[in-house]
Amino acid sequence: MRARKRNGVNKILLAGLGAAALSFTLTGVAESAVSGVPSVKPAALDMFKQAADLSAMLAIPGISFEWHAVPEDNSGKNTEQAENNTVPQSSTSSTEKPEQTSTPQETSQAQSTQQDTEIAGSTQSTPESVVDVIAPVQQSTSLISQNIRSDKDDLKQYTANDGVIEERTYGEISGDFAVQLYRGQLRNNTALPNDLILSEGCKTPDIKIELNGEPQVLIIHTHTTESYEPSYEDGHYDSSYSGRSLCPANSVVGVGAVISQKLADYGICTIHDGTVFDDPVYSNSYSRSYDRIQEILEQYPSIKVVLDIHRDGIADGDVRIAPVAEINGKKAAQIMIICGCDDGSGMLPDYMENLRFATFLQSNIEESYPGLTRPLLFDYRYYNQDITTGSLLIEVGALGNSIEQAKYSGELIGDAIAKALLKLS
Image (cartoon, rainbow, N blue to C red; front, side, top):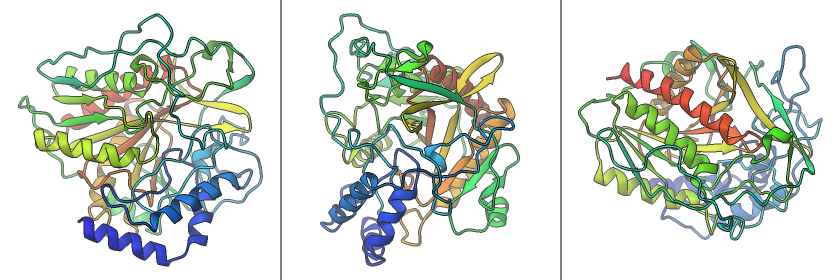
């Protein structure tokens, strides 16, 4: 497998750095950038890292998109929407920084030079109060929480209001890349025809969930310190806040705890691992999480589903965007599922199985909570999704959202995912 991946990387390298740099410039997901395959580090991959960084700095200032942020308003711009087949028109940017994933075919979101630096030192544990993690960290019959930190609240020092937060609701997309699922949509950024995705990708996933007390699901966070807006109610943000926190109650770890608890409540044995992969060094976070996932699977080979929970970074110029949906009269952070597609290199040989699982979850979440999801992103990305055929990345909200909105989304998707998995039992 590792040799096949290395051959795939070399093949992509021969395709030309120019195309790669352009791809990096035009993309939109904060989690992507390039690196070597986990534990495989060809020297040539440094060239792609440099191309990605250069692309981020020279990013085309603005993309026009097909999203409809609110009814009768097409002005919403989103960094997830920036694709190679769009036309540069208006200004968008991201609050995230490029991360090194595991295939040069992946693309990197345009980032500010401030966010292009390492995050070492950006997460601090200085304030005095300790904030409890959102879910129990002890073992129970259906939940195993491990490596959950107990850092103090490290966001209280961000009190300035020199930036604006704007709420947007991202609805249906249109265009040749839009695929209508049973419920919800898929954005097809691959060369695969839409009808193939519908006929093959929407089949029932070949995953068997067993309610026998053995772990079935792993929740993990490659970008562990990704956190949310601490002063959301003011409608402003502190520009010195980079969106990172080691305190689980502020970060995606707290959201993962909510999801894990929901799965456990339905009797689905779940492991929630809070190992920090992106602090003090951000680069190669995916390589480190890859190794950790493999360790856990060796200990618990019964695991079929691995969900890597992140939060996105969406901005329109200096305005940070909070994607929201109103569910049962309460604002929830919209979510986006990301599924990788093999690019011909053999790095994701079972990608269609992952896609079936992704469309299965997308449809079930939208059936339970219409409007909660943004269209599923199907693209030439990696994100360690070769580890299991149930491996997916889920963006829960963005930096502009409040932690309360993100946790509420965690409750909703935890409920919907649990119900979906029980259909596979």
